[in-house]
Image (cartoon, rainbow, N blue to C red; front, top):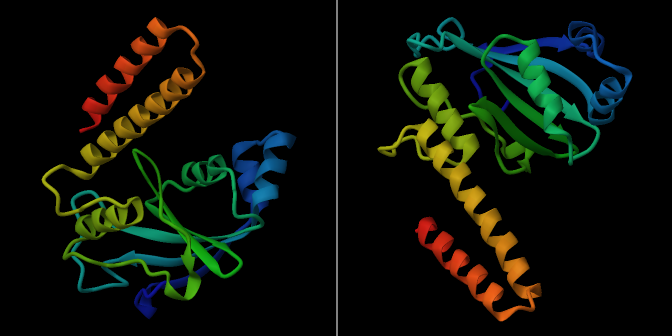
Length: 200
């Protein structure tokens, strides 16, 4: 399963009813959850007991892989965040839709990989300690660089700032195209130039 060692395999179904009862969900929230998710199961546990070559980390003693079979590809990420709150453990989510898989992991916010063919989907166990392995998984799923001088957290913050700047630029460019007054158009153009400088 996801190219993990056979010793990590478990099969522990997680029932929707348990999720609904734990969160005391309103009918609309239950419907939203039910519209996205078909079934769930904990399929792997990575720890020093299941992968003896790894040493216990300072922060990470182990993590689970939760396989979530989706009813639709454009799922609501709030449902995944709710599952993260339900299970007070480190979790890698493997979201399955038809023959495709997307990995998600919560690290400051939800990090999501690209969709890939399920038979090619792999969770890499790179590193000597569980802390290293976890950081490398976060980096792989989030499209970050685990070897960079910046920490994973700093990279996430910078990426969010960059995405915010790009949204601002897009919004100003839209305004600029529709603006009739020359002076106002010039001011918008100057703001765009300034924001593009910040991007560099």
